[in-house]
Length: 131
Image 1: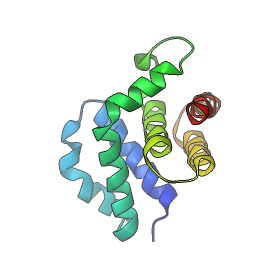
Image 2: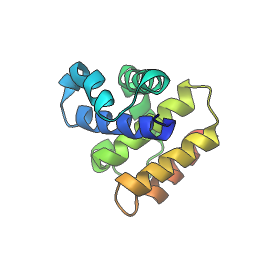
Image 3: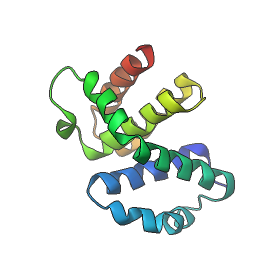
Image 4: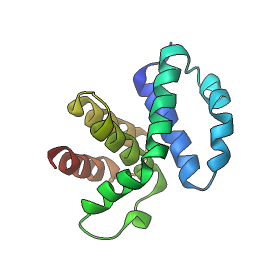
């Protein structure tokens, strides 16, 4: 059975594809999650997260931009942006432990993103959490 961490990792992959312009990914979400063995409650969790981020992406992106010291959204890598979008959605819209959400984002960034990403993601999410 898949864990919430695995569900989040799958959502990051879906958001990455979506960010790169593959908005048709929505059509294949069920198949993609099934291939990754994300089923039942974890599938519902993943679908809720993905749909929530997409629905609120403008607000989430504004939140990211408001906490950047320099540059803009286009200066953030797609993987890092996907991790941030997911975590900020969970911080702003879900009744989950903020510490767990931030820790999950950091751990997933260690696995999926560039070397400097965990520090950057931790700093930005800390600002969002304190805002």
